[in-house]
Length: 321
Image (cartoon, rainbow, N blue to C red; front, side, top):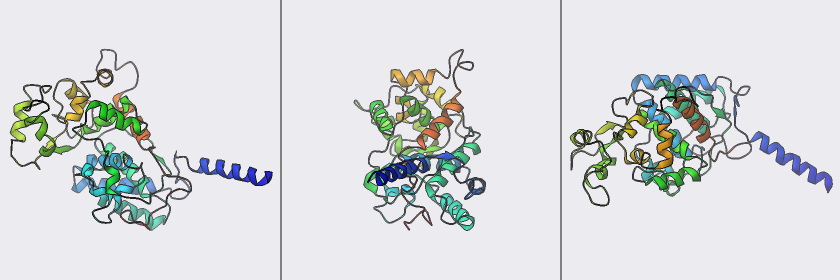
């Protein structure tokens, strides 16, 4: 009986050690995986200049529903997670599938789709001249993908407290909220997400008074009332194609495009985080925005992961085995 108990304890501890993410997880089993994924991402960028924010957003949306388990990649009809309202506009699925196919050709049954999503996001950030960082790998793919599980995604209309709560639920701090929201430094949004802020702002209607007065006519010209809600505009005014901290400066100055970004400056704690990057001594004190962003991405990539003997390795990312 004692021997059995010891074996069970050792097996449990072994499971824990196997279940930890680590940099270089595939070093022996699939040493070329990172170069393969990077090659596919770079190839995709040649034909789609918007692929960097697309792949970055895909990783975020995957991790915020059931953890970073590749559940958003499943295409099994309208009940699949990827069709959730909160995932509108999420793309990059074909890039992940192509990378998976190339990885499978040399390392069949070894690398998870969830890890490929995380690697592709890092490579996408590099494409936009953002920071490089080591991606922890060892995630396994999930068995569940259901549209209802994405009901609690962070939303552009969320209050600052709702955003804080949603991030805290995932083990992310208020600083992480600011830093990961700053991913809006690259990419675009649709006028659809601007309508309330421009023309029916709660509680009294009209436009959001927190916007810089000189910015309002500019936004209304791009997104006129009753106009085409599918028109795209940069989320980072004046710097939408480069990865930098301009998005945070825009938020400070009333030039935030999205309501959720603007809300970050209306809260004492998140405002303090934003301001910390622009103080007189900030270049000499503490970490840089780029370093903090890299750290926040690594932290986000640990949300709810399946590892060790959990989950599975899919043969293709869009379907369960």
